Length: 377
Image (cartoon, rainbow, N blue to C red):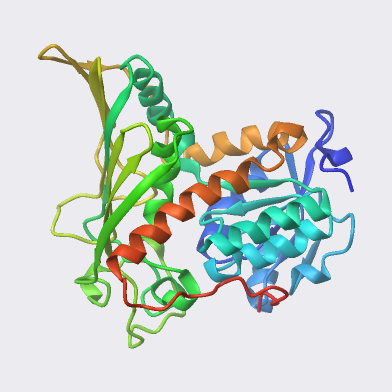
């Protein structure tokens, strides 16, 4: 089947289904898709009847189903998959094998095996896989990338997303490793790696080490109250990390220090990216995500020969990066060059994550998440 559905033409909205109505599907993707003129939400998929019917009524969506296998052929030109982490790859693969294009919320996969599963499904079904990790679509990140291009060969990147209090979904799947694949490294670290790895070009990451800790993950005071998660059980203890640190080396000698942290002793949630090049350095201070406890204004600076200057940044509302990513989706959906790109990037990202986890937990057995054929219930 073709990877370019007829509805992806410029004169017609892309008919889209949203699979998974947890926080991301319900609060990020569905409202934006429903309001965007380039899309028409034609179906919802979620195993919980009350959840899908409430969302269906709120956004006037004509059809709702319990499982993606129930989605009729031709009902959508694209399915946004925002199910829990451990189902991302398998649900997306089932759709891709049917020839249905997929936009997959991050993390795109939890293991290298799942990355191969997605690549195989994309080839077998002839449909395109697109990936969701919105941080690189931020205007301030785009400005940093432009400045980084002027710094000569990149020697080192420091990247950190440190929340003051922000452990998500306490007692739910987010803090269960068998369902989430990991903690802060999989959740926040995916955004960080998706932002900085492209800065390093195509040189492979040859070494990756790291450490993890869990001082806050079961502390009620460290939870992300702003998410409004409901239906979780705080008595269920989480077994994932709330903090991860990694150090990477590439084949051409560049290095990256990564720090992903759900909770800390800091006063505000903060994201910092510093790019050091042969001809200078640049630093972006901002806050990724939706937390209200954030840096008030993004700040981008460049340092050369002992002089630091602040560079202008456009003003944009919180979450604008998700709208910008949706603006680009129809074009990516119709572009033959998109085929295979998301799977290749996911393979590079998950390889780094797996190696950091292996260094941090070297005695633990490998965990398999690629539950081929598993239904998303």
